Amino acid sequence: MLKYKVVHPSWIFTFFILFAGCVQKEPAAELYQIFSEARQFQLKENPLFSTYAGLHTSNAHMPSVALEDITRRDKFWQAILSRLEAINYEALSKEDKINYRVFRRIISDRVTRVKYKDYLMPLNADSGFHTGLSRLYLAMPFKTVKDFEDYISRLNAFPRYFLEHITLMKEGIKTGITVPKVVLEGYEVTIATHIVDTPELSAFYQPFNQIPPSISGADQERLKKLGRKAIISGVVKAYRSFLDFFVNEYRPNARTTLGASELPNGKAYYENKVRKFTTLDLTPEEVHQIGLKEVTRIRSEMEAVISEVGFEGSFADFLEFLRSDPQFYAETPEELLKEASFITKRMDAKLPSLFKTLPRLTYGVAPVPDDLAPKYTGGRYAGPAEGSNEPGYYWVNTYKLDVRPLYNLEALSFHEAVPGHHLQNSIAAELENVPDFRRDVYLSAFGEGWGLYSEWLGKEAGFYTDPYSNFGRLTYEMWRACRLVVDTGIHAMGWERQQVIDYLASNTALALHECTTETDRYISWPGQALSYKIGELKIKELRRYAEKELGRDFDVREFHDAVLWNGAVPLDVLEELIKDWVGSQKN
Image: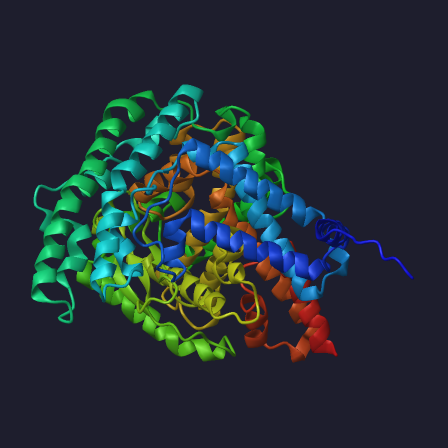
């Protein structure tokens, strides 16, 4: 009689686990598992991200930015990075190699920000953690009682959220990691605008003015009462405490130095920012030299326009003429907005000749919100939350009309609206068969490079027929070339603030107010200003390559589709994609 040894079930289970642990997942399967885990973690940890992603299960909450939570998240992202590095990259498909490289850059940047303690400086010269919150409701649904209750709970969480940021900024003061004091003059308006005595006058009250009739009258009154209370005891309390801290503690103790190189470990910090915002392995000195070369080239084109209009006087005299002559400025905000709308509508008609595939999302033209306008740039694009019924918006700054020249408006409009950021972001949102992060990632070198390229594309589309408008285009291009010089000058070469303002004022037709606000932006946001020109130069380089290789078979519409319909990618990845596209066109 055969005797069978009985194996205890627990041993079978243990063997199975050990065996499974020895079997590695296929590289692609592991990669997509990482993508999924990272997405779920981000949605859980950041309720604001979840809201803007079109998911509304966390609408009652605000994120935690307590130091222990920042540290805990950083450990998670470091573990994700280690798992990525363990994947056999060469075994991935061509598409997944792109996914891998984009995702790895995102996570690497996230880990590096914590390494250099960027979280201790949660604001820059024109915005901060507190500035977009009054428009958060646009990303939220307001159809049911629960939708309103979620919003009220979120407003009640503001004091805790603001206190956590204040705690971080206090640590920044202790460690010398603060925004430079010089750029913070007047910044308090972005805080004070939300301190009101009457809750109905608060921007945060807007949803309560539009409660749908499907909600009963009794519930409407209850929700409005709770909303008013949340605005006073939640929102106003939070902004008032932040204003008190900012005016009495933060600004007086902010650092008096300018450059990022003056921060602890500042040289390495800025070198990292250069790589982050260009997505290329460039040094500050290399970027500086590229900028000087571009400034010289563009200056000669600007001089040619001055000769064309028959102006008698120096380059500086011409700039002063542009800055001071009333013919170049709108008289009312409505006039400026109408002109911007007319320009973008004319460009809409040109898009089919420049692109084969266009996105579905429309856009509007609107003024920069009042709480942002005084310290804001001339214009910016604001995209909608995923799944919302909002369009994108091209924001035009109507504050101080005497510093908003009309000769810049074509270039500004093409950059921010179409064929610039609205088109680029809307196309990315419609990408199919890609991981979620590919639809919402923003890489400055790609996005801002495309924006600057779009300004130049306007000339090819038949705009800038007026020489002053063409000079405006050139002054915008010169402005971005100057950024390469002054950003590296500030953060790696010891340039002073007035030196930067003077350099911008003597080389561009930007209003002096804008030269100042831009300078403060570069001081407080190291490296970001490098994205524009470096990205544009790469896109133009790749277009020249495609034109040369394809000759008469080159189709600019297909080239633009090849650039945009992969979403935002690092510039080295873009180069590979375009060269692959050229090869496929040849075949």
